[in-house]
Length: 350
Image 1: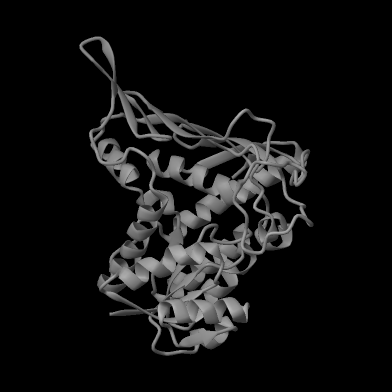
Image 2: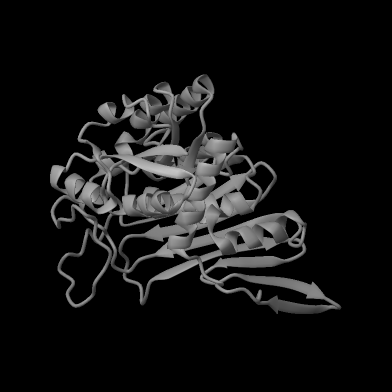
């Protein structure tokens, strides 16, 4: 069995812990969190005795084969490198790091260690994503030359560490945009990005004055510090001539929240959000195809189960993960280029 430790006890950690507990080939033996009360509670809930407040102590436990990193973004690279050097396989929540330089350092550590590192691009593991990927790989859409993705929250700054740039690295771009960029790029066939033109806006703050409308809040939520952007958009061009447009927000004067991912190819098109749909042309007629499957939507919980199970399988059998460190590096290049373009007012060439 793969013996696993989870570092970080925030809200996302449960989506790692529960699938490990329910996986017959994995054994959760250690947890780490700086919050002693939360750590003790999780240890009791999941029957874990090895509890640590310092991740270095967890990594020193020679029984542990692999870890999940569910901490603030500013510690992802540091902990990943330390874990790899300690001989552990690593599943690190997105984003891989805060900077491209850190991403390269993680990639180097992976190469030296010979261990598996899987980046937490959970949308790659959705059942609807996997189905659409089969259609794309069989050439049903032809060459995909344009994609657009949007994740707009009209009110949804999670507060806490999410709104503290020193811990998160940014706002909706690095939190939500990382998913939108990655899933689009992945389904487009991962073409090499060559240029990025982006904008960020910090006009509305966290809008803590709004009443009677609930929204997701971080485990350490507060309505104080907020130095991240409200909104980001970008146009990314690729070496094969394809392009991707994305926009994401924590808060915006929009009528309602909006989420979509659309792909356009020479032989057909597709949507993965809000529901899986395929567009094609037969006998000079345009056809909108609705696959007959149990769930056309992205199921957050199921995708995490698939992601954890895939990681466990890769570690135990030496298989290549579908979300390797090289992909994490490329996505970091695109994210950082959006922020650089926004700061300079110029297109950035990669």
